[in-house]
Image 1 (cartoon, helix red, strand yellow):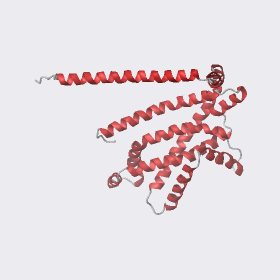
Image 2 (cartoon, helix red, strand yellow):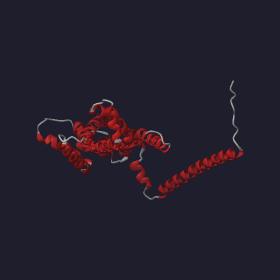
Image 3 (cartoon, rainbow, N blue to C red):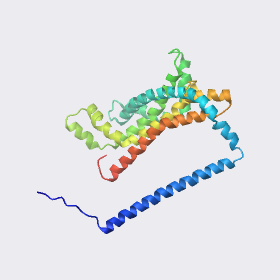
Image 4 (cartoon, rainbow, N blue to C red):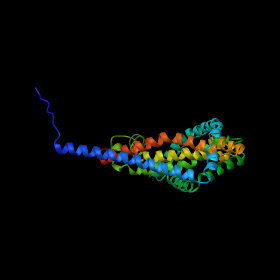
Length: 285
């Protein structure tokens, strides 16, 4: 028969807990007060600005917000479709680039040099220039016939962001200790199985926050496909602005892009904090 022993905290521990609780409540109260003061200063500053009524009418008109919302929302669906296929293309192409750049085979040297040149060039060219080169250059060749602008925009996004993702993955692959590869090969795994089952899972855990940040950035840059004439959220807002001479549709498009990004931003912050806690506690990452 075992007796459960209940331990009563000492008075010192009770005082510590009360102190931490008071400090926590004090921090929350201070944060709330400072936030309210900042909001009040911003509101007062805007109200006292001579041109605020004109800016409010031009950018924050409820009438034009409601009027343009359906068109901009319909255009956002185009952005979501482009983003979906771009993520798949970037994941595949970026992984191939990373695997080629981390390979040590002499046979693959030309591909390694080409991959290094590609990532260097693509990371140095602005995204909008890539869109122009792909969106207007490929149709100009006259080889493939008429190509939808949305498809050309997707290809441009994939080509641009694959260079960034490939470098992030390469850093993750190289951060995995060589003993992991040696151990996997000693167990009888082939080179391909080692990469797929050992290297890639560990590398993804290490670079997941950076990959999420690139994904969030890609969500915004997908809106640049409007320069090719695709009627996405940005182009739909631009059309409404050209007919009403009111800039509220741009605010509508911005809010929709923010709402699209918020879940992934929260997920990224949560995973980064979780990863940091595991590293600080000495657990396996």
